[in-house]
Amino acid sequence: RMLTRAIPSSGEALPVVGVGTWLNFDVAPGSADYQRLPGVLDALFAAGGIVIDSSPMYRRAEQTTGELLAARTPRPPAFLATK
Image 1 (tube, one colour):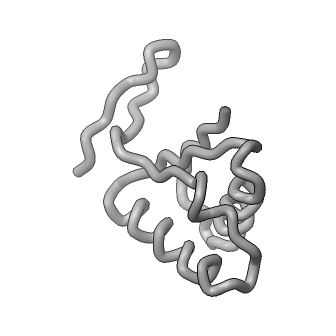
Image 2 (cartoon, helix red, strand yellow):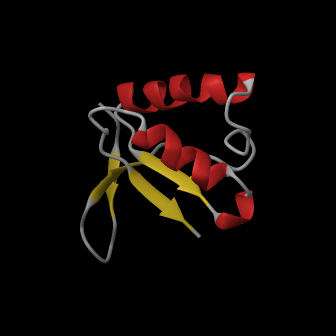
């Protein structure tokens, strides 16, 4: 089980480990790199993680993250952090 910490303002407990999207999620659909990303999310969720960090400054990373999560049925719980 993954360690958690509470968000001070809400008390919601979040896992202390998440995944960042800066370089690896800024990829074109259909590319080999894009095809590997569902496995990254599988590993995160299997380990008990839910935090995914992104930013509009990461070019296509937010869009890629949204596409990958929308393609999952059922969609796993994810805490999406953006700057």
